[in-house]
Image (cartoon, rainbow, N blue to C red; front, side):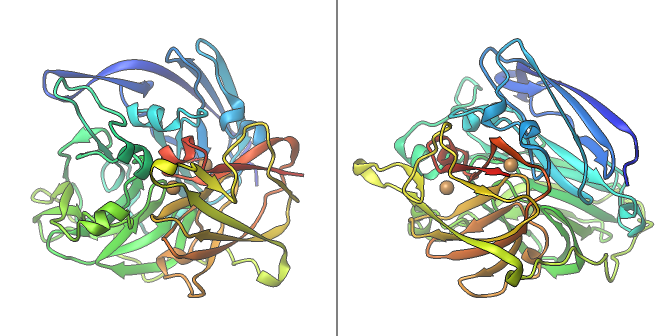
Length: 439
Ligand code: C2O
Ligand code: CU
Ligand code: CU
């Protein structure tokens, strides 16, 4: 199945200035540009060779979130690139069309480095993904949307972690950016849009819906297409997750994509009760041309869910946070991340069930490297249609036990681990992370 093609990328992490507001400079980090990085694209069967040069003044990494790949190429905390040095990550794309992403995974600095700009999208295609009848003209009717919230100081610079609350609940901002743009307006060009919604925030969960409550179709989750479009009026997007949707804008209106204020089950927000939705972005459809595409009835057969009977192991993960002055820190199964400790081994090509439990006061998006998993159930209940596709990140609400099942790829390395962690980056940085090797 190899295409025999090698796709080369050169990425340079640098210190920069960005004008989010006209005439005001904000200190940022960027990848080949002043804030965020380019959208990378490759196809199943391609080999990618990515050279990452670090010029930000301190150590950094780039991790390929959602990718199945050898541990040494993963770009986690074990592949630190010292300032002034380069690292080459080379691997074959062995998975289906999907919207993945990449970001810094520097030990204890992931939150800050992503916040200032070290992240980007990585779009995968495969042989028949263009034959599904979906919009696929990049930037015309196939639009990447990296949603982030940031907090700006009076002088225009970003502020990162101002309080114990930020540290405990994760860093949430009061200004929304889509693809690095404040108050984003998408001038729609076609009457049917495909939006690749990506939550690239540090901590915020979005509950997305349109201002006129129009329905739209979900076509893909983190790791690939659903079997058929699912019609919804709103959806939840936790940190790290991607959901592709089709939106019919043939009515030529101006409509807002909005998010509800209280969403992820953050304790403080739950106590403050409901509040007005805020705008994520505006879609101005006044100038659209008729799309050549319609909403398909079906997409394609999904990768089968592994049979739970084939799981050779069930593991438990308890997500824990010590609250208040007593501290206690961020842990999984009583342990804080230790880069020199391997938490367990899994066997390559084997199937496992992971039971992720959350008895802490807030929701945590749980992410596993090197796999696309399926959700078996949430507190014993089958996942929704949207959540029945391939996933690499799953929001575990307080009081929930989420069971996921996955078959690990064939890559093995007894020394270099992969990570699993909460994707609220402040929680990850403070220790809600562990590591496993595949042997
Ligand atoms: Cu998106 Cu371990 O990362
Ligand atoms: Cu990852
Ligand atoms: Cu968390």
